Length: 506
Ligand code: ADP
Ligand code: MG
Image 1 (tube, rainbow, N blue to C red):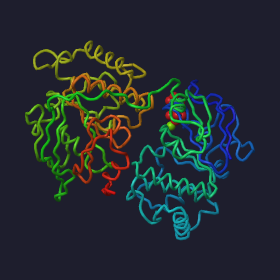
Image 2 (cartoon, helix red, strand yellow):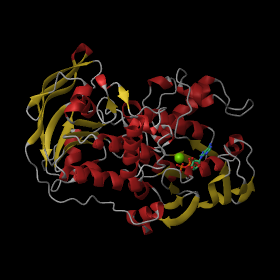
Image 3 (tube, protein in one colour):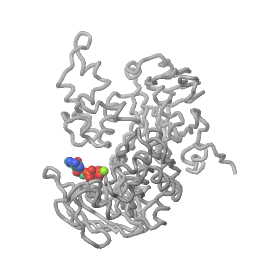
Image 4 (cartoon, rainbow, N blue to C red):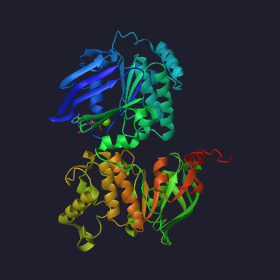
């Protein structure tokens, strides 16, 4: 269906694609995997006519084609769903789908017939999209389906999806995969770009692996496994399992009783939550996103916006409920937030400025009367120490945080938070958007921190991650803790049932 031959593409002299060869068989789901920066998006944008290649050939159904714009690719039946959706929010689904069609295109029909055709396409695949709804009223998962519909409306036979699951909850991911399988059954060909190996193994028929702009392997999915793919992606063996000795918990560090967060109109997003976390243990919170985990972590960190927090929060037996974020940090509560762009970093500030957030009011960085003076040399030293210890690449203190990949941003935040030597670490979605090599690194640091006597509260929507890391696992649903389970002996299915409210009893 699609073949890239010896495709090379340079940006400012630096090769993003270096003699890339890729063959996608018709009627298959083909995964393109690799770490951030491997060149996956570049290759797919070339296949979609979005970029021109410096050299190499594109073949569609065996014939060489020259693309000067995506219109050429669309005409040949290629559709692409980008990492960031390209929809106009105040307009309806149908308006967005018809928008941008070339005048004279057979599909640039009147809106009423367009709506009918979109409804039929949606029904055929079970997408449940109403063409008259406005984009701004749709969830992220629904918007993604609109992008799919947009491509199908243009009669795409080959669909390229760039990191489609990055924005989806596990449930929405499962739904997307069901849709992709239906599309394959209809004879469509799909290329899915991802860096999650579990997804590759779940959805694809074949897989091509890229590293540093090159294709480093191609396998039939049935004939490979996560360890082999990880090795190809990273270029070395990667530990995919968390190895940790049994926890040696000591005294309670965090004590939470009857914690509730109430929003306007009496909506309780957290209700009657009680638990403790001891020094030297990792307590995990499992749950489907949106069941109060975010509110819990924010209430503990002192970041609740627009809601009233009630109940007891104690650190080492002392109430911290009324204290500011800064006061809590000074007492030893560190926080790796789930939204690292909004809460974790100042993206336009450099790594030095980001590395001292939260330490900018204490020695050795802040000195003199009122700790008014900031010592540049100390800031630089501290930053270099953090960048080295947490393997942040590139280790350039003067680069803006925005220029780092997601994995390196996360390592910087973790480095900064651990440098404060916390008694309690609140850590949410620690490896979201992080490469495999980075995941291994972060998991090791968290276990080391535990073994050094820190108390950790871990929230993750990746069930595998939270069961692998946690010593005790609490399950949250609808703002409450509904169960405590032993992650060693409880099956994923049982935990999944507790998360969704089904009964685990036979
Ligand atoms: P992936 O999708 O695998 O994460 P990309 O194809 O986005 O990788 O990027 C490959 C390399 O090309 C990276 O080093 C990236 O910084 C660079 N790159 C990608 N797009 C551009 C661009 N428009 N301008 C300059 N450099 C780019
Ligand atoms: Mg990409």
